[in-house]
Image 1 (cartoon, rainbow, N blue to C red):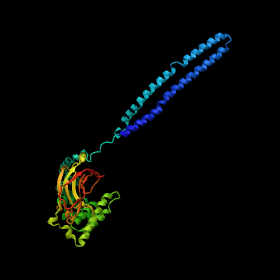
Image 2 (cartoon, helix red, strand yellow):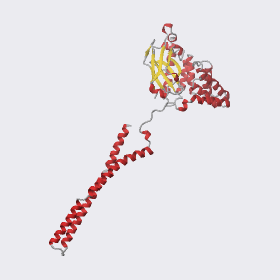
Image 3 (tube, one colour):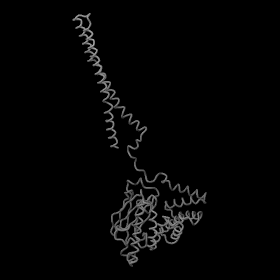
Image 4 (cartoon, rainbow, N blue to C red):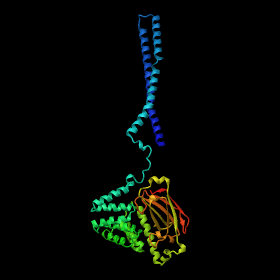
Length: 406
């Protein structure tokens, strides 16, 4: 804002440098021309008087003195002063009108709102704040048109955003009933809803649905991700790696962040597979009562980000190894509207049975508000993290969400 006005002032001064001098210059030129004409007339009259034989010497002298007196009056009269005064008044008028007219025209036809950038817009607009009401309207619509598969799919995915997983299951079942069991996205949606309503466990029916979806569409990215996670939960790391490597092949060059996350999961699965092959699985996964790890955590939101807190957003609180692969060891899911919250991370919140919090030496704890509800960080998410924590650790961990994921 200050830079804009400084530049404006400099430009106005530059404009004055071109506008004002001509007024004074013109006046001086006009005054000099006026004097030159009077002198020329005086000389011409003197010549005529000298050539007039009807006048004697005394009469000629008197006539010349009279002309000289008249010339003096002309040269010392009011013309230059009046011209200069008019120039000054004109200059003053220009100095006032130029900036006033320029600013007036700018504010009328320009873009004054760009002088000072507007404050950052909230992450969620007013429509998203009214999302639950929109879902209620959709529910009523589906009661009136129960044979609309697209409507049921929208309703099921809306329930997932609101974390109403148990209600999402029958909605996705309706999609499959109407579309048939050959629709891969519908099978994947149902598998995810069942898993989320069962403490994120993919064993059993979710795995069957995912395998059926991949049989229909082997390149379905969401199915590949969840099927890999299901295999990892079951300790079948070779299958998990196969699914995730197939998933990597589907990414575009601009998906570098997602690619990095999947590569981290693959690296972690390889480490666990190698550990299992050397016979050390029991040592790294079975914790005695003396080595049980619990991390008490308090999560708060920075005051500066409160106006950016999305409605109906998901809060993920998770711990991952300080070194090596970045796959979470334990994770808790909450509603962002519950902030501030207190949670405890332990082995009961482990993502996979073979990857437990008690098996780590150092971890970093993260708290992330997700607009989309996606477990992977995305642009616009709100983030907070702890320093490196050595385990076991018993003191309360304070995390402030004070960053925006770029």
